[in-house]
Length: 118
Length: 108
Image (cartoon, rainbow over all chains, first blue to last red):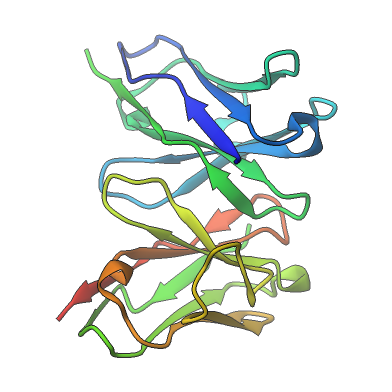
């Protein structure tokens, strides 16, 4: 069965960086992309960007350009999302999700809480 | 970017009733590339509907999606206790992908 297992919760200070991992299993990793979506406390869903696990192509949300980097390691079927220059409004649950070739998100990780606080 | 507006913000209904949720796009969604997700407290979202009207694997047939262009609807024919949750629409026809702000379906 398809599973996406994310790394654990993080607490960071403003200005620091965080790197969240997402280990995939149960399918051919390189046949799908991975999207990252975040959810601030009590708020809705925000799409952050996408990476192709096949060739590493990326597409980032404009408001995160320059602060976010998404990568994959095909040898371990793991996707990573790094966010730099953290601010308090980056406090959120970060989800990875498998993206179908058309763009819908059919399987989700359990989420990783990132707290940014001084 | 395409802005998705969901209505109503909150829907108060009783088990067994029919729920109708709306998602309106600021411009036409290409190829009806619209999905619906359900999210319960403390859980990740779950895909219900994709391509506006196709049910995802394992989703009960009381959930149905319809619409095209700028107007889309999620219908839950008879609410079960486990259906009380927040529902989000998402368009993936035009980058960046965007989500609606959500509709909460609560027990009346």
